Length: 186
Image (spheres, rainbow, N blue to C red):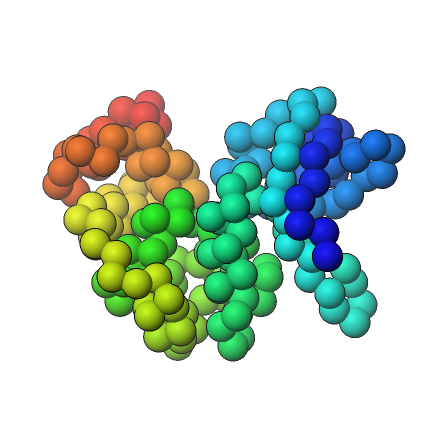
């Protein structure tokens, strides 16, 4: 199993990058955030998961071991494959996802294309005991409300999430978080 790769990114695509490791190019599926935080022709180390299927061997890459572990937890849920899991990780950081699961917030998970209420409930049921007694993120509901408001203004969900990631966690209240996100987007 390939667990980690260190090399130079030689090409980027919206869903993956090509990592050159001593002359061998590996196609590694990554989240949009990882894609944004990496640059071509720069050396990088990625934690990887090798997905073996009848017709393909796919590598999924993560900047942190925490992301890899959470990815493996997600694909352990019946009906959640690697593509869905990487999309879920593309929503936000792992801490926020853990908070959403701990709080039983299915609406947060259903923002991923292909994840309906039934699948979101499966994820929550399957992972709630594994994520432990995580103290809820008080801004989770506020972020969801701010994302909905930004989407109503015409911004994409990914633009809204990216802007909210830039807003400090100590900024409380959906309206205040929305104002700060709009400043980031401006």
